[in-house]
Length: 232
Image (tube, rainbow, N blue to C red; front, side):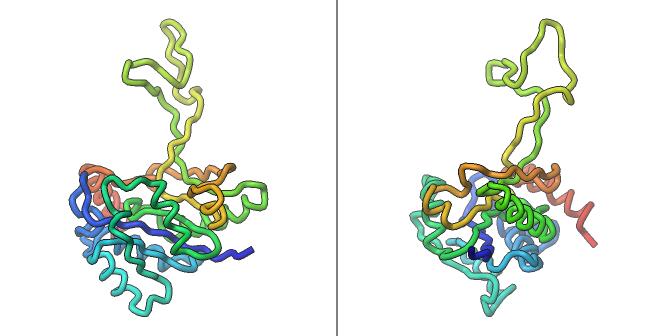
């Protein structure tokens, strides 16, 4: 088995919800989330190669400044038809094994700034341990244990007895995909046309590690967290 681990980092130019969220200055870091994520990945001891798939020239320049020889970061210009607002995730998944030719693929995002090198190393080690136990992939998740309603205000995750609210700690645990890591082999990509297999291992992360920037307020909150916990 080829145990090479390649990190697939998709970056698309432009953002509908948060303007230039990947490359605008983040918590004083010039180059923003892309620079921070690439620096984290370069510190990882378990990731062999980083594939930056992008149509964004600014991201390409950041990557080249960090690794001019492309010894670890490989910049792959992404076709414009895979960078459209209407491009489906399925199309991008099919594209990945055409640019990553072997081993195992760790798909992650620049918008998870608190998934650090140490976190990725833990994830990779756990992935290979769980492969031995019969799992074929890994997803990072956040445990969710709270009152969940649908749009009709109907409770959907437990039976509501008349006049009785259970303690939240007694509710069934649900799992929210936090988008920090999807990991499986290239073979699964080819055979299943998916970035996870049929038996994924659920890797629990805390709220900070799970933080994903999707809206403008997320960006501001993430900057505050970074300043508090990570600024030297």
